[in-house]
Length: 304
Length: 252
Ligand SMILES: Cc1cc2nc3c(=O)[nH]c(=O)nc-3n(C[C@H](O)[C@H](O)[C@H](O)COP(=O)(O)OP(=O)(O)OC[C@H]3O[C@@H](n4cnc5c(N)ncnc54)[C@H](O)[C@@H]3O)c2cc1C
Image (cartoon, rainbow over all chains, first blue to last red; front, side, top):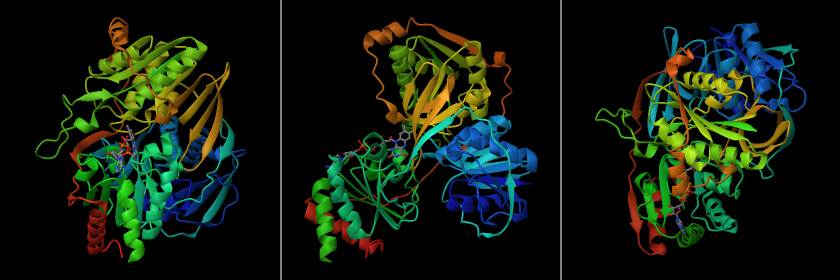
């Protein structure tokens, strides 16, 4: 069986290659790259490189057509993609172009005869579904579930193919702030709508600094209010994290937020509302005003 | 401008119950209009206000789906189409095929709108699948839509980047919840909606073979947490919390 993997970054690619190992050996794995010039090193035996013009590396339609091309030319049975927003869109388009079923956010893969079995979180993480689909298929793999595979020297093949697309990528803006790495953070201090003003983030940042923690937030803080960049957003539709310690400050603890933090070793919470759901989902909770408790914590940490 | 908006009556995750063996009880489970689908309906209505035209809501599902369609009608959709399926559970691919076949019957459309994903399963596959089946360009995760006469310009937020994409019309777009604030229908609108038309199409009349993933089981995810709660003056609770975290070895 031959497998093709595609992701936007090296870390995801290494996890995909690891997940792919249940279907094929390294020699039968193909990494699809749309970057242009490429080094001959990969987690897969082969790297197939497409040089896309313009900013097409963000065009789901163009990427889907590239993958279809790979699929036809190299006889691919399983496509593995990351769960990024772009890859989700690519998977959906590709599933129609190739008329194959797709499972998103998959983990715990296994093969049974001609089928793949995969688990995924459903109902905002309240339950896990075990799904079966037949091969050929497309899977997007939940991040952080597979140990990254090693890179070794590989064969590189350049393809000359211009994918059809009606979309035009007009402009791309990169984030201004230095990026945070929530996925590998040991401690995360995370803030929600309990925050009254954007400027008050500095108070939470101070606690993060005192703990050597990364700063995260609930969806409304990044997406609705824009008080922190999107990459800080934790939960079902944001990043899934697994720190030793997660401190939820002014976060009510809705299922969609909890979905992203359940692999944390210890969860602590600070919330004024004793009946907030976060207190049912934490190890240690403080019922109190974050504007009073957080500065106290900073004071204690600085004095010790 | 003719706009189709696809919505789902989803099992309400907050109300979902499990049996003794931990299996989710889906038959007769409480449902709601999938949270973000209201944003898709709102966006359709916003565009209609600017450009004129008609908004038709489509939903594939069992009888519960009528509730969601009525909600869309109360918000201001002109018509609704219910593709009646026997059960709630259909794979994304099957749902997408049903929706695209139904949409074909009501052609032409300038825009097809979806939300980014449903609040119950969130595969986020249906928008791209329906678009591709209809042969339309697809723009996912829109947080701003600007409709011109012949094309549409969309601002999209990916994990780290903001991207501006343009596409000729007709096109299909999925929206994120930040795109707008959905309106609440008034009592009068809810009553008027009861008189608006909901067309019915039976799933077997569309000639779609159920295909795709099958559900083996859906089980509760249980996580045990200690739930030690501290109450009292901030100086005291802060110290207690810090001591506990040090005992756990997660703070030095
Ligand atoms: C399909 C879908 C996907 C979603 N994905 C995500 C996701 O990935 N991540 C996510 O976070 N959300 C997500 N959401 C949204 C989610 O449902 C909640 O709306 C959101 O998590 C709430 O954020 P919050 O806890 O910050 O705000 P709120 O729910 O408003 O809670 C604020 C909390 O702060 C407390 N508070 C107020 N003042 C203080 C104070 N002075 N001190 C201490 N506490 C205070 C309040 O008691 C309250 O509990 C999603 C929703 C849907 C439908």
